[in-house]
Image (cartoon, rainbow, N blue to C red; front, top):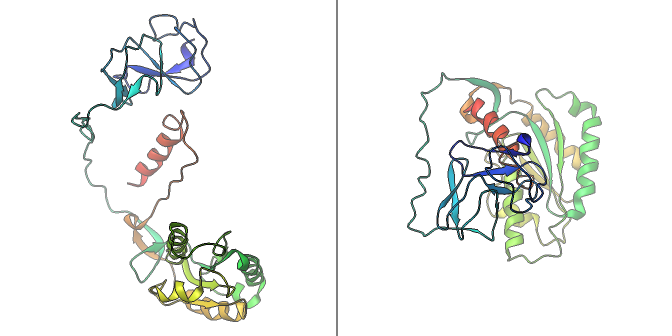
Length: 282
């Protein structure tokens, strides 16, 4: 069963099970039959590991054995723990400084705060879930509007909706998180303008959002309470459409990586792929 396990680094003293392994299974790379079953995606000892010995994965310490682990033994929370705080894990010692690359550029939209966007949308942001449908209707109408569709340099209109903003305390972590998230959307470099749509009775009040600091440094920000949607968008689109793509260094690109729920294979499949994709830019 040579294809049933994988060793991630030559110095690792463990391997990863690529399938559910039964007790007594014989594996290439493990000197004895397995003393017990090992679930798919879990770790097992490639050789005997003594109590207190460092356990290596990716060639890096992931902890210490809390008991003797026989060759082929399942390595998990029952026999793996953290070492003393004084332990030197040699983090970053293998890092290699690469020579600088020639400057590369892309054509982007330069914003007044120094950010550079790859798109030029107008966002329709909602302060509360109750105004979500209105934001969608405004975006749909804007896409069909002949005046707006004729504007140059605009990629479209994006409704940004959520399911909160009301029925919540205005002084807790949830409120702060929502405030921070809405501001993050409003300041995203891919938006040439933001229309904020509120209802009026929500906890996340439009005046609170606006009053705690200008959401956009370029001033192309408006808000309304479910009225005058297309009229306001036409005024904003006129401003946003005057921004054209211009050369920008690759260092201005912001790469977002999303965690989709880590499992035993994340470090084998998705993480290296994302790392390689990032390396191509960096």
